Amino acid sequence: MKAGRYILLAVLTLLHVISCDRKEIIPVVSPQKPAGNQGPVVNKTPVKLSGGVIGTERSVDYSTGSASITVNGRYNAFDGSFDTFFASYDRSGTWVGLDLGKKHVITKVGYSPRITQEGRVELAVFEGANEADFSDALPIAMVKDRAASGTMHYLDVNCSRGFRYVRYVGPNDARCNVAELEFYGYEADGDDSCFYQITNLPTVVINTENARAVTSKTDYIKSNVFIVSEGGKNLLSALQTEIRGRGNASWDFPKKPYKIKFQEKHRVLGSPSNDRKWTLINNYGDKTLMRNILAFEVSRRVGMAYTPFCTPVDVVFNGEYQGCYQLCDQVEVGTGRVEAKDGYLIEIDAYAYSEDVYFYSGKGMPVTVKYPKDDEITTSQLNFIKNYFGKLETALWSSNFKDPVSGYRKYLDVDSFLMNFIVGEFSGNTDTYWSVNMYKDGGDGVLFTGPAWDYDLAFENDQRTYPINNLSDYIYASAGSVASDATRTMVNKIVKQDAAAKARLVEIWNASKPALSSLNDYVDETAALLDESQKLNFKRWPILNQRVHQNNAPKGSYAGEVNVVKSYITRRLTRFDELVKK
Ligand code: CA
Image 1 (tube, rainbow, N blue to C red):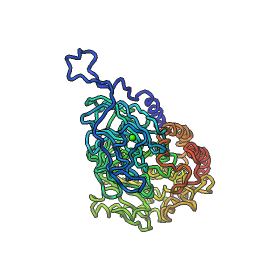
Image 2: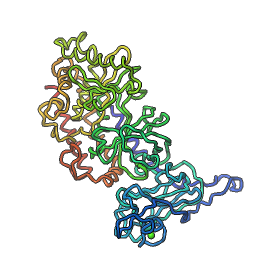
Image 3: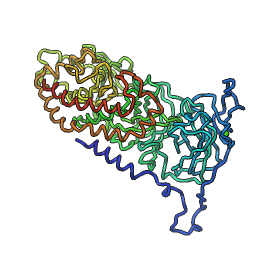
């Protein structure tokens, strides 16, 4: 039951061991053999590199505020003077660098902010590439703090691949203000033994075609995706990946959630699933950056058949640091995901009307059909699942609904329904019955409930149900619940009016309690895992003092937000025990 916790501990321990060591990665001629028997000898003595100045062409003339190609141009970043600087006309997505002519392994970069603009280098990213458009760019260093102007600052680079093109990408909304840049290294093709990982978390690099922004939830655009992991020793290259926006409320936040679709199936960062589609969850309204991770751990500890894979990462999008995300399974039918043979995946879904394939049940429940896929489902398949859901509903609303043979059990697996109930209600998720996933094999067999998904409002992150542990009843039955009336009635019939199901709920809860009682240790371990990344995340998105989405009063610090979750869990263990035994 504690597998997740031990995996996390193992990862934390491993991270101390496996950061790339420069000594291992400099491409030297094998010391065991005489140099004369080898190919060209690489002179690995780093020197200050020069090359053609490349970068964003339009600069800004601050005296007029208008675009210029003569004043504050990109050449100023390499003229040796702290008094002159590059300032791009566009505020974001701008850069300056060098075409080195040939591949070089970079060993060190230097930078100096524009005089008086010492914060404008914070979160800048240095990248190397071998395509002039930087479509294959990888980060090689990152400026993590503001820095004094009038002097150079240096970062060691620990990336073994040789690059012809190198650049400095300004942080968001800083006009790429930089007074001086320096690159050091030596000419060599290098190798792929070591890459730069921004923090202890894996780094996901997304380079879209023509550096386009992702502005649509329906239209994919092309992008190259790279994932650096294992402290820089592992690189997944997924070229020509498709990317688009995703999410409902979360799509409206400035930090965007994405869906990516690889050309080939990949197992990602140790995922059980080997698949093409993945999601990048933005966690903008969840300032602990871990509510989904925690809910999935609850799902595992309660014993649900399938819990989505979900792991924290840093994201660099077209050279700009975008913060701490979670790379997760797409909820879909597949091996290692929802295993519903030739079957169906549906969602009781308040947003069903915005989906391509959905229906309303007889009692008015909105249901999205997620599988078979939108473009593959046949009319008879849609009618079948709609009809099947209708039978479940009719059985539940009939007078003998509790009958073990002819009642709702004929169509619904009670255990998975109750487990999903515990995950949602224990975690305190207002959205649990706004969105309920269910699946069914194609042949015989009943509807199963799960997987858990979308828990950013859980663990006391929703003012509409705050404070959850003071509610006199379950969340679904409270005034703050967002469930439809019919969905609420369905839950009520099962967990309150069916004595056998209610008894089973107590059994499953009692079996889960020992594993859940140590959940706060997992919170601490996850907070430690996220610590380096959360610091950068809240520099990119300084929202710790403001309310976002359905937040309660902000706590002003990451630790304060994590403590809200811990206090909630401590009280919930007792309170939920009272509720199920009422
Ligand atoms: Ca200068």
